[in-house]
Length: 343
Ligand code: AMP
Ligand code: MN
Ligand code: MN
Image (cartoon, rainbow, N blue to C red; front, side):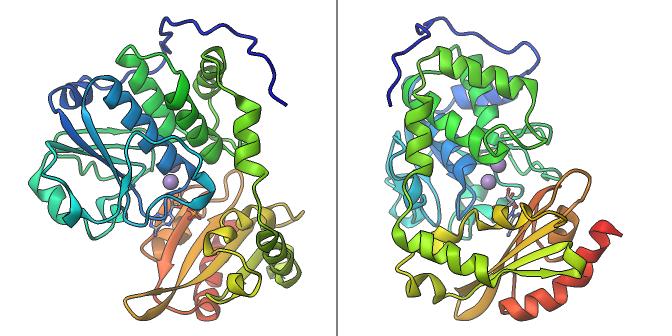
């Protein structure tokens, strides 16, 4: 149901006095008119939402904006209003941008191989909330691991540029916030996050409409796939480890998409006593069978350390890596490292 708008849009831009956007970053953005906005491959709601939000911000300032993502945006965010198409192939760029802004990428490699050459040729701004980000931005860096979502940083950035959080910009910021905070439920949620959510509502955001578009859009295939994943889930290590394995062909068996497994790892974390949830997705890369690993934990249990052992990264309670082994073998090699989390 669409509720009537309770809060008149203020028009004026409120800002959060507890957050400072670096001046070097604002200067870099202001001094370029053609900007390519890139985020990590296999983007989540934060990567996609932050990209769209920054795109709307820069377009409102009159800049030429192009979004880039090596694997494109997921179908479940197909409704998100975008300031430009999402380019997947750098060689199809219509001319060189003056600036690349990298979002939600703990290191430059996460942006994908295709863009690495361009990163060496043009100034780069790096905006991110992953711990250990090596500040790979040649023009400016804003890294803040205390931020729950890169999208919150973009919200503050838009407000620093005196734009109110309204319309498509507000929607994109909201998608980023709810994606990385579990809808304001994870421990990373800050007062500034909730204050920003309040400003989004004051700007007229259709919160229930977005919730319906995000949540009430499953295919029957996805429901059946999750049913299968739930029945096959393994509870190991005396109930402390919840595991699901997904072969490449499994989604097809149910008429589901590969991306439909996204988020299933959160279900494993719901089991009482489970301290680490592990989702192992079989993928093929350069003709090799590999495994995309998703790890989740709660509180002080640090799964980022586990992911880092396998060349991945992330946050204390949500981390990932790609391992050059099939899923069963990946489970065998990763399990001893996971035991360190609770030992
Ligand atoms: P996911 O399980 O794919 O939702 O990822 C959870 C978190 O882990 C994300 O916020 C990413 O920052 C991080 N992450 C996932 N995959 C990788 C990777 N291959 N390398 C570094 N960080 C990753
Ligand atoms: Mn992300
Ligand atoms: Mn993020």
